[in-house]
Amino acid sequence: MKNKISDKSERCSFLDRMTKSSRARVRKAKALESEVALLRRASLQPLPPPLVLGDFNIIAELKRRSPAMGNLIDTTFADENQLNAYVEGGASAISILTEPEEFKGCLTDLRDASTLLFKSGIPTLRKDFLTDSYQVLEARAAGASGILVIVASLSNSELNTILNCANENGLFILLECFDEQDLERLSTMCINSNYNVPILCGINCRDLKTLQVDFERFCQLAPQLPPELPAVAESGINSEEDIKAVAKLGYRTVLIGSALMQSKNTEEKLTSLKKAGLKELGSTECL
Image 1 (spheres, rainbow, N blue to C red):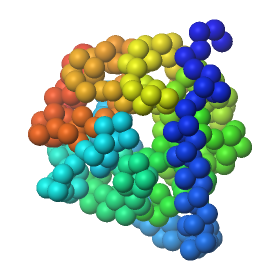
Image 2: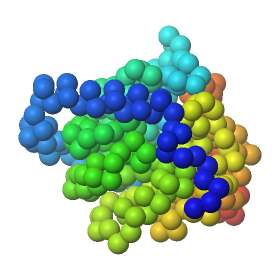
Image 3: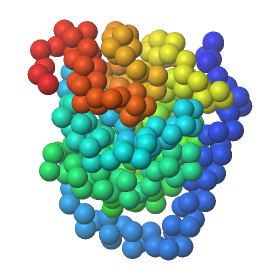
Image 4: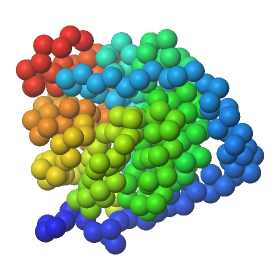
């Protein structure tokens, strides 16, 4: 295709470094608990809340640190308060960062959030640099309803293995793409597939080389979005104007982290952002 946004050979070392670190974490985890034992533990967990999408949706994110912005919380921060604000603000799902080095997250965060949100019926999403089906089982064992998978970090074989594992264990999948190449691979993997779980197509507008956001990417890639998959706009969403812009382009779900983590009134900001999306679409859906 012409006018590629970026070539695979130009991808920055950040993703490579995070992927390498993830593979090392998997090796350590497998040394402590076999995949058979993990699968048994995951199978004993109750069914997590399903992902239910409305006319316009926000996946709110819990993260302590951003590589681009540094620490996002102070000593007064409480996970429970933030999660409750997400629930009251109308989040359709909550993304939990479990990457420990750059984002300061862990699986305990995912397990605690899933436990807290279970009665509210709000699904959690494990966000990490997943490289192995073992990590899908870790997510299921921690009570997650879904996983985020970065298309660019995996071979076709690895991607297929992870997708199949998520499908077998009932986890919805957010496939994160950065350019046309990723979207082509996603379409190839998912076309005529027999997956029984929701699959979402995410577009991340953060540049992998500079870690800066390029909002124009949402517009550039909108024509290539698979029409059969819900489209998710990721990164760079901070205001009602941003929400309206991506909604016009066909994104019916957005994933927001830093803007909500830094808000002084999280519930109020989340509510206003969701209302902006619904208003742009002319929806009568109630919050």
